[in-house]
Structures are given as structure tokens and as C-alpha cells.
Length: 384
Image (cartoon, rainbow, N blue to C red; front, side):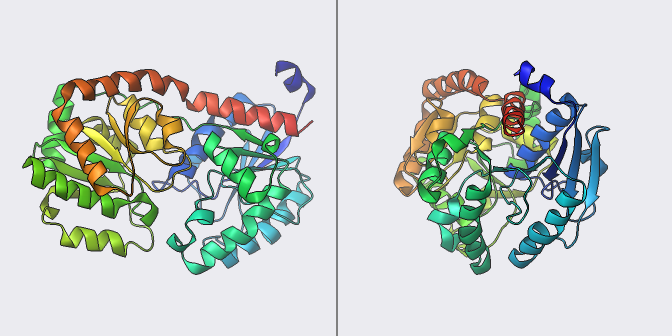
């Protein structure tokens, strides 16, 4: 790889950074943040142009070789996505004579002749279109096959997503490289004192299960509520269920399940938390209950493993690949199976500790340093 790097004296690399939004980073946002922070600092000989669709925060300008650019219009709607990528981005790429366009959220400029690399994290919209607003799902299902065809190379975050993209979009697997997500280094285990203080602050000093993610239908939170209710009825325990994340769209099923629960007083919504707060809340949890219906990777799993928190996870899509043997897997459609897993992990301490120990081993497979290195290797190869 060093030989390849020596070939390049200078490249103009344009990056779609519109999801770098202060205090609002989600899974793709964190991927963008962590990989670009490392790539730009490690490659000072190259020039990077970060494209934002609105006012940006200086915290995202990681090094002196980055030029931030704001392009209009703000791209937060399917029609505006089209204008932004096919007019504004295309013009900018031509204006500066860019060598490469990197898009960490997978959207490309179809009309541009510049080399382009797309990071397509998953294609949940193909399998669960009704989870999305009408125009969003129409846009995704029409344009993403075209983006996959347009891209010189596609990076994705799991072998599951690689196979899924290849099959659904009729793309050769050789065109797709798996680049696993990593984990923020702040996620480590905490002291007993921090754990006690955190539980006192958010859970009335009780043990709690935790879910982290957006409140979205495919996250299966309604069934999680139902399983938790059955768990409470069978065990008569004082456990709480902590839900960390913000509402997205179409959350009626979640609201209905919550309103009908006999134990709503034991379900705690924290909203979005800053990384430092989230670290303490996650590391103080008794176990993570992460049972989505579809997931391209599942960053919360490796965050939990890094905090020595055992996992209850769905046995579907990418999650068995990510968690390996460090989780108690369940059918996410089976409420009783989720409930039984909660009982198992709450009553069998030896089993719970075994999952923690397995997580300590499994977590070593993932780091943002590895992610950034692999993504950069794709950039180098495609720039030859």
C-alpha cells in the first residue's frame, strides 16, 4: 500500500459531509466523522473539500487540508436531494476539477464524470419500504440502484449488506468491499461508583435494560415493550427499560405499545444523549436489548461490548455477523423469545458474565482506525 501511496503527489478529494450535523450524529454521521477525521489527518499531502448543505460546525474541519464549502439548497427532502447532487455537487466537482467524489451516505451525482465511491450502509428500504414516507422510499428505490451502478467502488459495513446489495442491485461482489464500523474510544467500562450514580439518576437506582437507536418501526421497539411487559409480569422484578434515541417518522406503533403498557412508569425515554452521557448510561446498564427487524451493522452492539455490557440481539440480517458468539440471539418477531432472553440474562449471572467475556474478545475485531485504513485503501486503488 505504501508503494501505491507514493504514486500520488496530490489529489483533490471532494466529500459529501452533509450529515455532519453538530449534536445530531447518527450511525452514518459517526461513520463519516470517525473515518474522515483519521483520513484527512493521516493524508496531509492531499486536499479535501467537505460539502455541506447548510452552516457547519468548525469541529468537523479536522485539519488544515480541508476546505469547507456550503452548497445550496439545503438537501433534506427527495426533490432537494436531486437538486443538490445533480446540479450543485456536479457543478462544484467540475469547477475545481476534482479527482474523486466520496459519499459516505451513498448518494452520488449521476451526471458527473468524476470518479465516485459510494458507502452504502444497507438497503433496508428495499425490504421494508412501508417504514418510510412515500417520496423517500420512491427516491431510494429508484436512485440507489443507479448509484450502485455509477460507483467505481462500493463500500459497505457488513458481509450481509455486501451480499444484499449485490443480489438486489445486480452488482458484482468484486465491486463491493466490506468496511466494518468502529467504536468511539470513550466507550469503556465504568467504576461501581459511576454505575450507582447513573442508575440513581435515571432509573431510581434500579437495574435496567437499554436500547439505543432512532425510534423507528424497523427497530422493533413496540415488540420490545411487549416483551418487557411480559418479563415484568413473570418475574415481578423492579427492572427498568431505558430507551435512548429520538423519534423519526411513523412511530404510531411505538406510541400505542407504550400507552397500552401496564409498566409505562418503568420505561424511561432519555432522548438523544451526548456521547459522554451516553457512555455512562450504556456502561451502567444490566444488558442491552437490541432486537431490530433489519440492520446493516448495529454500532450499539460494539459500543455495549466495549462497555462490558452483555447483549440480547436479533438473529437476523447483519447482527449475528457483528456480535459473533457474544450475544443471546432471539427471533425479533417472537415476543416470548425476547422475554425469555430477558429472564435468562437477569437470573443466570454465570451466563451473563460469559457473554461479557466473549464480548471482550469479539470487540477487538472493530476499530475506527481499521475502518479508516480500509476506506483509504479503496480511495487509493480507485484513483490509479
